[in-house]
Amino acid sequence: MRPLREPGEISTLEQAAEWLRDAEAPVCLAGRGALRSKASDSLLRLVARVPRLQVASTPGAKGVFPEDHPQAVGVFGFAGHAAAERAVREADVVLVVGTRLYEQSSNHFDARLSGPRVIRIDIDPTHTAASLPIVGDADTVLSALLRLLNAGRAPAGTRKVAAPRAIPPFEGAASGACDRLVLPHALFSVLGRVAADIPISADAGHSMCFCIEWLERIAPNTLDLSLDFGSMGFALPAAIGSSLARAGKHAICVVGDAAMLMSGGELHTAVELELPLIVVVLNNAGAAMVENGSAVLYGPNQVPDANYRHRVNFAAYARALGAHGEVVCDCQHFAEQLAFALRRETPSVFDVQIDPSVVPSAIRDRARRMWQRGES
Ligand SMILES: Cc1ncc(C[n+]2csc(CCOP(=O)(O)OP(=O)(O)O)c2C)c(N)n1
Ligand SMILES: [Mg+2]
Image (cartoon, rainbow, N blue to C red):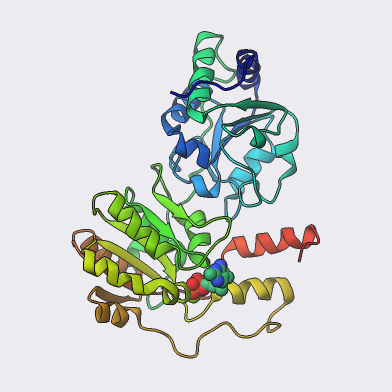
């Protein structure tokens, strides 16, 4: 265990424990620092001790706290959930653990995070601006905080909050209600359920937005995103790395058709290495995020068309590189094929004909915030 870094920390911790004990509506925002310090167990012990505490994660830390837990409110920040936004806005105490609070993890610099009674734990002293800063490793500090909470009087509130499930399952998925074009919510419901413990990497574009919003993650380190730069072409090589790092086990990559055209050739690496990679291409025949984002910011037809005239067949592309390839037009078919792929020892590619009419709420929300701040 790394030691706490600053002298005089204990009184700060006692103050934090007092605030949490007395809070009516406390919320914890856990970031990638909490993931890196393996703080998931401490977070679970903390919510058991503080019955009113709700937990949100930043987009990059999805799964650090199980999203199906009754005290989970989902993701706060880019492409996140209304329940998490509400929980932070209405909180009388906010416990921020291991996040730099940049644009994507602060929900576009939400004012509540610079308000009163914000406890902020971070190993980097330059990232602790808050009413109660604590410098130290996330898990070490949370463990010390728990010891204080367990030793002192019980925190207020006896009944646990029971938030509605942060990511409701898509009800129509099992009945095949989405023939011919696959609804993204339905697809991610299947992925979350069938591949609950498989690491998934998602590319820039709609893939990342839909994964944050609709892919339930219940275990840490099961979602890898290219936040910050949001670089296309990231997810397939990332999934190869993820599989290799786990001794050649299954890894899934969710990628748009344009992004697949950037680094899809790496599929050949997975074929050569005989990795059980599963590539889910969201095929909407174009750079939909550019199309939709531009339409929201500048109005329809104000930017050059970002759609392709020639739709690529990624199942044929996969077969040409030596992988298994399948075109998928309905969710039930996808669920069956995914189960087969999880038994296969070599790469599988699904060319999913995704419904292009569904625009991720993140695109509208981000544009609205940019307008509000005069940034567009
Ligand atoms: C290397 C790189 N180039 C350009 C962009 C800007 N960009 C973000 S999303 C996107 C379109 C992505 O299209 P696709 O992969 O098909 O995903 P879709 O949004 O259609 O689901 C572009 C061009 C980027 N993020 N990274
Ligand atoms: Mg696309």
